Image (cartoon, rainbow over the protein chains, first blue to last red):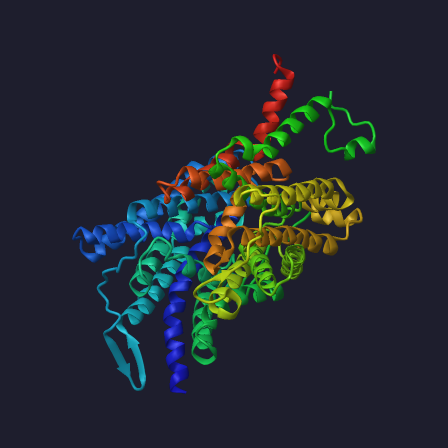
Length: 293
Length: 326
């Protein structure tokens, strides 16, 4: 039983990070119908920016914020410079997805060029080796901090979407773009804001992942794929679904790693994607749009 | 102008005499490559020929049938390892190569089943999951991957006293030529037209009598067969296999070749294969920049030239044919 709780808690803390990644993907998919294949790479770029600042003796808080802003700027820039012109030329949905893939490749190459492909260890104020014990259950300071910050940002994100004017505009835009335009909502700017916000959430996840994994230009690939799995599990166009999906995936993976086999842990997420897509493609909380000929 | 008057004419590979002349010249030029080009170039051309097979297969799936897939590395790995293990236990190469293709093709049909329910981005993710799962299975299973030392595969002994590179070039040229002819024929047959109908609108295709399930699965099967053959030839060419050749990046490379060469074009597939092989060769000093070039090429192609290199080639031909009129 103690083992069970232990695995659950570890899983929740990893799952919270997946939830942040999934939230960014779902936000972009919901508002622009684009699966953002560059999400992982934008995140990597932001994390590397923060790392570069930390190396030149900035303190952690400002460096993290600059990293998040940097990621957000890349995503917004991509939206304005590449996506909007592509949409003007009637790019198909598939074409737009491939555009994000192209962006991902560009960022990956540039990060390897400027950041170097050798792995770095990421200085972080919370330690992985300082351990709290409650009863028989242990938790490192890092994973406790990760869980707390992730849930806090999910909460703030919820308030932003549900209680502010910009959130209302975002919801309106994703619900019905032409109608939102007619009502005078500057949809381009709102969508650009969504892209930036999604990237910032991703960089936040990257900052928490960097100390646990090791920072190299490809370190986000796996968390990004897990985030994808989580977003699909919860339903790609549902924001609460992304959070629920992330937490479920984290816990399930931790159980699979603990009770079945550690080698099975990583393959699990991909099997889960295929299974969910076959049984219920719209996800747990999602609702897919019907299509006509 | 270019008026097709009968079905026979529609099925012809090359219609006009002029086209026959220059296509013939290009084929002869490629055939004589080892006589005038340096050995290094012949070696690279052999790799391009191997790649062009898989890219053609994926173009049948992505370009003609419109089913987006990111699982190429998985099929490639299955083909390569099937070939490798069969060759090691002494199966002669034609049998092993055929089995490699069939193994990948059968797995392709299984992977194709989600395509009956999923569309666009969802299918992309499901196939991507498949590709990565196959990679991880090979990484984690020493029995399949041959362990830490990798899997070494006996190479063919060159015939007619050619040197190894020249022989590999002609060997792969022969097989690539067979598969190129096969792709042209698939595309102009009923099967190819069914694929194109599914791409343009699957519901409408079903209404006019295309068996949607059969042709979607067939498209996955055929394309994976091609990719499996590519894997087998690659294994034979290198004589050595390790799981790290089949990462997600490999899927992306083949995908980039399809997009840059031009969707729904066989010539484009060959040009795309040449692009993805030549760019890393030219940029060997700046390895990190290879993905950047691929990415920029994708952006340029999708925004300015949606038909890719083959579209540009077609427009150039049209321009020259109509010169001086526009």
